[in-house]
Image 1 (cartoon, rainbow, N blue to C red):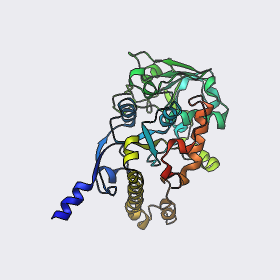
Image 2: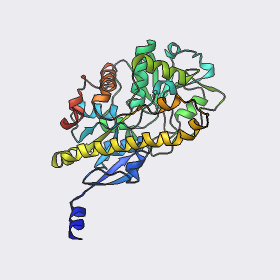
Image 3: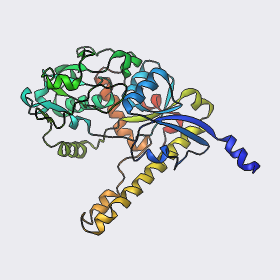
Image 4: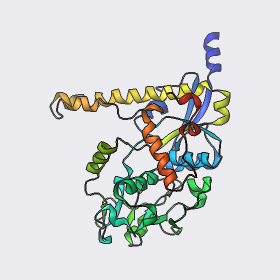
Length: 339
């Protein structure tokens, strides 16, 4: 009895701000726990989570916008130490929507157009602009941006965002939104449209099924496959951070947190196969699908993600969000660099 009580008292308790997806569920429901740590989760939409952490440092550990982490560190903000946990990825440029009457039939047609964006510095927008530039020759300065989030409730408001030189970034009036401006013809396109309820984003209209709106890419899935096969990049959106004072006081906690998320990722991979077994056994999916579905796509750590991390750091420099090329050892804990 005494030994059990001592073990309980020796465990640290950390709050964690986290988003919900199959790779975080085992952490959220405490099916998997970091050694020596009890996590108290708050599950939030990432828009709200990043704002609350950047503005108020509410959580001991938190998912964090990779773009905002780079920007904050480049400006001398040392509140957070990065942990290479990357639970979400998406081919963000394929989510771009355009008005059917805007004369946009290819990415090149975005030049000179009015483009809405929830927030200019957000990672999704950074990736989208980088791909538009490197794959299709459309540079940020070629477009006129309209940002929905206000300075008071934005990631950039917490990091001192200013539009990069040569780039036009307008503020959408408080009484309007990206959705309303798209339907009114006041915007021609939108990068990474968000309608999920949270404290930050205010668009609510469903643009994806509106007759006046279409995807920039007629087959977004095919475009994502093309990009991945050509570049090998599966864009990372969120990383993880821990408060610096905790990292310095309990340096062992960083590795234990990474190990726990690796275990959660492994569990998600096993569960994915369990979910599709019936489809394979009954022939609804071909037998060769089992090998493809068992191939891990999401991995944590620096080594498995160096190319994608160095690419987004390069994009951030090119787009004027960071004044220098951010090195990975400036963002992540020293103990993580060999992971």
